[in-house]
Image (cartoon, rainbow, N blue to C red; front, side, top):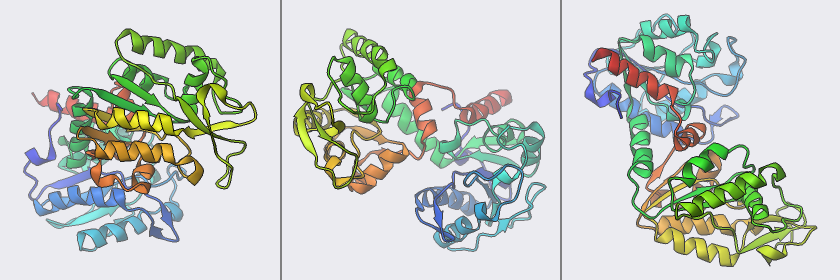
Length: 394
């Protein structure tokens, strides 16, 4: 990484503005999943322990920009953050012109989306953010793919700008998986549509030894291999794209394996009757909702012997018991592998949690869209701004 790191800087007595990703689910005024809060707390504690005057900012939900919305207030997040840090964390509603924070103290800024110009990366707002700090720390990998005032603009004008511990760890893990992978390298990409992940599929086809596709994406590849998918979700307009990707993978000595057998049902329901069929015998009135036992066994062998695994997306409707075994098998095999594994994306993290393999995955990425864009090889604006800031100082 070409950006400065927070750990490289002396923070004692300095006003440190940290951008975290604290966009967490809240119900009845309580945080229902504090994974991101706990992850951010470690970075915040590091700055506090260094004697910094810490201001933390984040977005929460999707309020109308520029307007205060009590339902999108950071107050519940501040309460949970305070419990984790063991100290009170005040919420500053009017923070854009500065907040008095004691050395070693912390204040949480109210939702950045309440500031007009945030999502437009407004220069004036960016300059105002930069003016209230001595050091800007970008620590929110999950929003690094967005060029917004609190993720990108402020880094352009802050006296110093650096990557926080979380962002640094994310980039190092992803670089390890993609730039210098141990072989064989396997990627798993699930999802409903090829059209939404064409770029990442194309990028990975040229990097990995085997690319496992799941969900509706797999159905399109099954159709591209010449098989009927019955009533399954698939994209007829992307069958040729899928066929081209399979040809390209083979040409470089890799593979996009097609399931040998699949689990089908007449309806998508938790109490549906699930049946196993060879991939060449899917009934016309049924839909593919998971991979079958032969395919699970094949994937198991591939993954347990992998040197590197990048996982983004399930292979079946794992939330429903009749169609969960394919994704469970993936999780177990990746967890048992001695290779380096990285998992990212909301559905993937839910599967990791559901099947109890969190502690056996080498790295859990907190990013969704940023994770995918990194896999695609795109520049992440939130990271690029830090790198340019450092280059300008040289």
